[in-house]
Image (cartoon, rainbow, N blue to C red; front, top):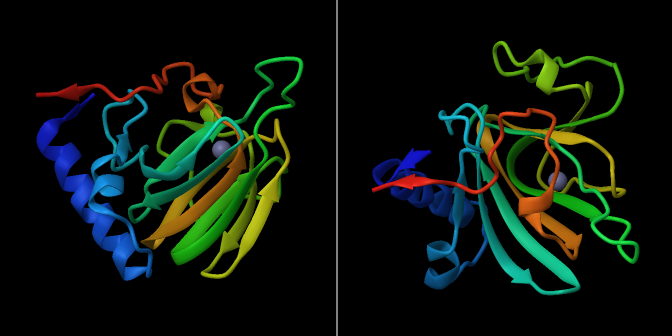
Length: 181
Ligand code: ZN
């Protein structure tokens, strides 16, 4: 859960980072931004800010903003029906520095695993991405993201998605943000 005050503050901060990265978003798109704390209680450690520019039955275009060293927990995009292999997701960084982790054991060097959470972050191949860098993940590939020292602003282009159904490695995660008024 997150307080209304923290939620609004995070949204304003993320909107400023988007603007700084050169992304034009409407007031409506900013008002629709989700500040996810994943039910873990400290969104600045494990959390993410996300807004959708397109979210149809076929595609999704979203902007993800990560504050400095903020971590979007490990998850993957599974198949939800026989006709759907799961979400294919392309990340394109437009601001700051992104640390992306995918399966492998090369080591977490530039970034770090949130304290005490080793079991919840199994993908250990680190890919550092800067503005202009882009990468596509096949459905089902585990991944987690972390903002660099100045945070990160990135696009997520993907096939159809129902984010609330994505499995996460951490069993304590609650995907839908609860705001305390
Ligand atoms: Zn993902």
